[in-house]
Length: 308
Image (cartoon, rainbow, N blue to C red; front, side, top):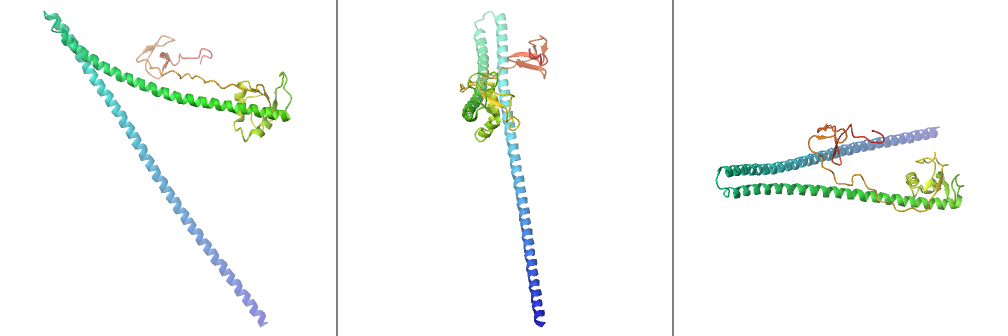
């Protein structure tokens, strides 16, 4: 009995020791969790401070950029005002010199003495005006050059987009012909000759890894008469049974499209002008519209087909 009691006491002591060890491990894990939470909180605070610092730097940079743009605009306005002030006195002096010369011609008996001074004053004013006109021509040429450069960039993008569409349509032709040769479908009614056909679901499953723009490519090919199917934009799952029929096995390269903005911008007429349609006066304001150097009321400028 004493031995059994000793064994029981030993087991109880072992159990107590295990419980103490478990409690110690739980306390250690809780301490580690608290430390991790503190570290996470410190990192979040540090990230928040870094984001605030970056935002402050961005705000300062934006403010500096705005200030620099404002200063540049003010400088340009001051230069333009100075040029106008330089041209105006020359014009007034030339006009006053010419008027005084003409009066002296009428009062004096000899006109030969007043003629050289008149020519000199008028020639000086004309030279100033020529300089002003040359500056305006330079600014106009610069604006036209910048406009043409931007249009060239847009034309290049348009040409790349057209070439990409041509490439996708040619891939579509190859895929439809290859799949129709294996498991083609009967030709739709009304079509004569060999017209390879394939279901949209089968084509989508075959090309989903190689043609990410299949629906848009089919729409473009349909507009160009390369394929035929029901509907406009096909959707995977809903239109899987729609039959796509190949009508052409080759296409030509897309032609460059001309834009309505191909011409240089037209300078709007200054001041009130008569409307091209109703002949009533169009004043400066939100109701004024200038198209190809023709002035319209916004209410008068409508489509002659839909009247909108």
